[in-house]
Every structure is written in structure tokens, then in C-alpha cells.
Image 1 (cartoon, rainbow, N blue to C red):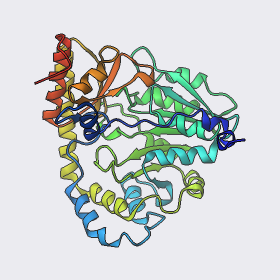
Image 2 (cartoon, rainbow, N blue to C red):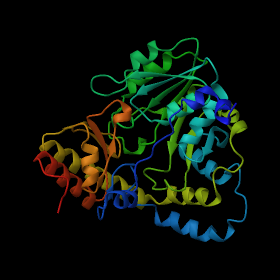
Image 3 (cartoon, rainbow, N blue to C red):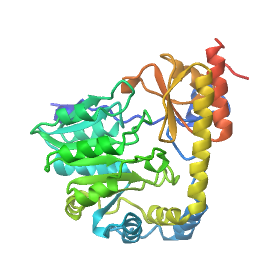
Length: 369
């Protein structure tokens, strides 16, 4: 018997998460120059200068273990959300908190419901715990079909995830529809509202997941510092829930997942309102530019409440764009082979993307001068 035979069957079938390609990686592999990365929904403004200063100040103390409880950051987040510190869970990225949920609530025979297409880590978390991921298709406008998700709940359901705004579509659900859905869920089902892009939402009837976390035990509002705050490389995410749920997650959380540098940078980023406002303004301007210019080329583009846009192109066009030095997220593995996700980048990167799409629309070869 080999070591491979000892691997758990549900792990052997698991496909690892595939991140977007880096610019230097594409330049090396394809021989292109000055590639622009519009795959990972990173903040084109970068991190807050205050966050950079906080990291530099603590750089000499990396020999010391971090504060496992993240007391300072949890206190700041609790104050911001109007909850107690015991109602905040912090992790090395919001995806770590998804993994903690799976460790606590999922096992063989259990089910986790999520929309599809959506964030790929839901499948990784469920399947790694030996549970079944029940994927409910989005509706015709690529919005959560909350009625179908409610109908999918069974006695085996342990977790239901609503990704709002949804990744990779950028679509969102409104407050009334969500409130009806959440109120009808069984009390013993954990409701996770993944709000990685919530700061970008423009709709007036935005879902108030934190309020649901305050009033419904077993509800977790999940957020991150990777997008608006520009700290993707430091890995800081957090959840707001009732104290009991946070306590269960704390039992399985690794002792030192969030580093000293990451906690300090996150606290500093929360205070930099000028950087936050600039990031929101740059995203809104970039979003409007991409929606307007891409639609003018004749491509189908979905209205977005996030920091990216979903574009219907043609199968294989993601690779063609990459050969032009514009790296976008192809969505073949998400059941959308004729779509790409384009992150809002700098004005120059956005213009480069539009120029490449125009070039391909006009039948240009895979080179762009």
C-alpha cells in the first residue's frame, strides 16, 4: 500500500484553489512586457501609508509571537460595528474563518449550501471536511436565487452561505429579499454572509448582515482587509457573530494565524479615512469607465456592486487577453466559459484592458503595440 492510498478519498478528489497569475509570471511565460494584472480584485491604490508605517515600526519585533487574541484589532472592529469584542473573530484572511466554520460544523454526511458560481473556497472548505457542497445556481441575471437556496435546505444542512456582493459576478441581493430568506432559516443552521466587497455596495437597500448577526444567533458577517484596505498580502479577515459562535470558532483557530505586522497594519488602515475615500473614489471612477467603454464595444457586462466587472466575451478570450499583456480571470472553472472577470485597476490599466478588448473585437492578432 502506498502513501497515496492513505489519503482520505474526499481529499484526493479535491482540486486546489487556483489564484490568478501574477504579472511577472505572465511576462516570463509568454514573453510579453509590462503586463497588467486585473485578476485578483486588489486595490489599485495600494495599502494605506499609515499601514505601511505601522509595519515598518514593528519590523524589528518579528522575533516575538503575536497576540493570539488580536485584542487591539478586535476591540477596534467591535467598536466600529457596535458589538462586544467577544463577538468578533479574526483570521488570516476571511477564507481561514470559512475553514474554521467547516472544522466546527461539517463532517461526513453534512451539507453546506452556497450559490454558484461563487467563491471557490466554499467548495475547498466543505470537501476538506468530508461534507457535501450543495451548489444552487444563480438566476438568469446571475443574482442569488434565494428561494431556490431556501428550498435546498434539508435536515443535513449545517451552513448556508450568501456571498453579497457575489464573486465573480459582482451582483448583489436587496434587503427585503434577504431578510425574508434569513428569517425562514432553521435556528440550527449557520448563516454566513460573505461581505468581502460590502464597502463598495452602492444600492440603497444594502443588506445589513451585522444587524442580523446581532439578533440571530448562528449568523456570521464575514469581511476582509484584502480589498478596500489593500492588505491582501498580509492576510487579515474577520467575522462578526454572537459570542457563542465566535467561541466555538476560537477553539479551532491556530494560535498565531494573524501576525503582529498584520494586526498593526489593519488597525492603522481603519483610521486612514483619506485613503479609504480615495480608494472608493478610484474604484467608482474605474468601474464606471469599464462599464461604459466595454459596453460600447458590444460586450455584455453586468452592473457591479464590487471592485470588478463580469464581461461576456467568447471562450478562450481570457488567454488571448493574456497574450496581449492584460491578465483577467477566466471563468471556465466557474461554469461561465464565455465570461471573464476584470478587476478595477489604475486608470492606465483600465484603458489598456479596453484597448485590448477593442483590438480583439476588431479581429486583431494576439499582439498589441
